[in-house]
Image 1: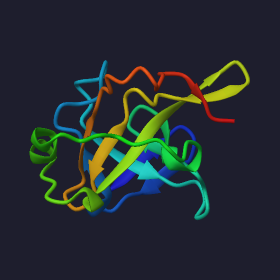
Image 2: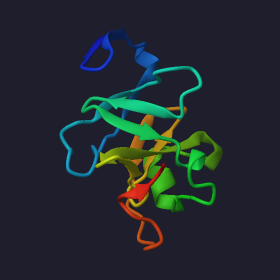
Image 3: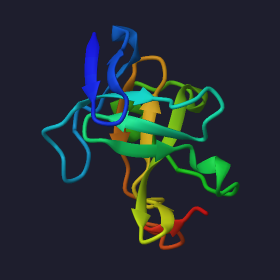
Image 4: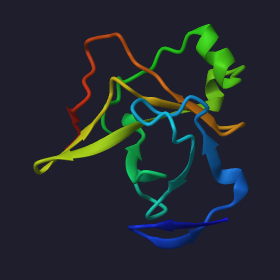
Length: 132
């Protein structure tokens, strides 16, 4: 399928690259289908295309970051093994600083390409954690 983007023009996305968030994202429940766009092969950042969200793998910036996934969440995502999950966080630019929402990670089942945004109760993580 062809997807028009504001940053990359029209790009071709294979159907098997579409990620579905059945519950949507917090504040954007009506938007459920996304795809990841990688600007370069060695890029640490990705675009979560639908609303121009930039996402990244938080382990690039916060090595001790982890997302506890409860058994019912694994069931909701169709995960039988944690190894089949990939975690991303939404990146924002605040003034001249890139920040990440570590309190609301996106967990994606890499096999079924479905995902859900989690809300972490642990106060250790913030919605505007500085990345660089």
